[in-house]
Length: 281
Length: 281
Image 1 (cartoon, each protein chain N blue to C red):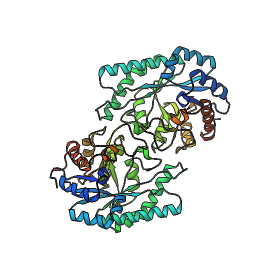
Image 2 (cartoon, rainbow over the protein chains, first blue to last red):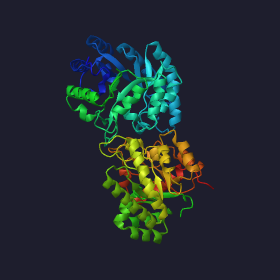
Image 3 (spheres, chains in turn red, yellow):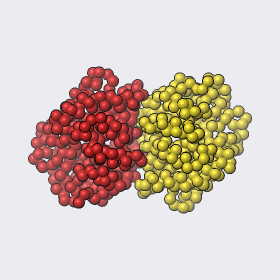
Image 4 (tube, one colour):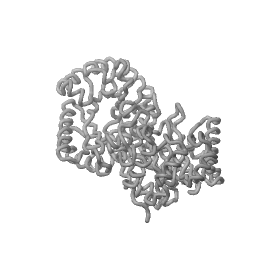
């Protein structure tokens, strides 16, 4: 492992052009010891095969992305979502990570009640959290930027995510702190402190904010240092909150995906070293 | 004026395909007595000519959009922005409206400090607010959705807008409450109450939230009733806060702009009647 970047974890999505064996090999070459994985490419390669590959290459899996989408009203849709999240718990356990990231889900079509949707997430967490604990997995509720409130995630602020998480023990439910989603929020630094004090920072992810946003606003997350977010400031907040764990770089970016994956990996490691606050010594 | 829609004001941008004379005529035919105007089309037609047209047709101008863009650091850029805002104050006074809407401006290129940018807005308001008062105009600081924080408006919440406004007398500086920008915010209902209690709701605007967002996220504001926002709930909040003034419908929408403007005007009036909370009796 690169002694200078012990905290860096590469989220698989950042270099999704790399297959899992390519990712593992490139991480080894770059001295990166940690990865965050996504369910779809892991399922495509095979969950057991991925776990075997990860063990063989000595990588640590920091998170599995992602469960969630728990806002359905229809009972059969809701049951299917819960079953899928139980499968995600099993996959996380098989991959050897203790953290499953949850993206809550948007408003069911035709509905307009954000508060009621958030309550359905709480109800779902009450079923999933003890189940996950029994499998050695904790849940990390991720607030997504308010521009996703309708169609992807009704949890828009760290305060809302913590309001949900704090209904459960910290070893069952915490939050994901992702700079891309919270950087605009002047309340977020205080909420990071709240999360740290409660032992609920279960995942930290970085992406930069670049404009103009692309159609659909999904795949415009900028490389660290390219955008409006002061990464040193924000990683300083999580550190001041007592967080000493891995920091994932998770970029959804068509431009980066069109490039050579190993080159993007090396660039990301260099940007991390340049822009992220020094870790605890 | 249509007795059923005394509160509706059509923002010029909603039907920007109509010239000012066409807009005035169409409003007359539809029984709409109030309009919100934009500086660029008014300047193109002529400020005095617009004022004359408005007087001749008996319309009321509810707001002029927009001043602002007050975050520059460079002294000459800052001086030019202030001068332009003084021109906007004169234009508002000439048009006979007492309300100038302000969009604050984004981060200057290469900077990352949202808090410092907000302080520069406060400094600019200290110069502009008394000047505007001397011309019978009040300023309405508009929080824009957090997706615009970097490139358009560093004021992202109603709480931030009120924190700025409350440094000045309410008859000088208030806020604009626009559903499109605040609907995701669970703190916004309390902030509307705060604004109302302080006499600082200087403008109310409606647009609905529809997805997917278009590239650049500017021109995807949905027709009332087409999206995720419960208009009855939100207009109920402003009413409960004591606001009895006009409610503008301000839609930026390529699809609406491609249609016949009079048809869009009629549709908008019908949607307003269907979805907006009943007014004070």
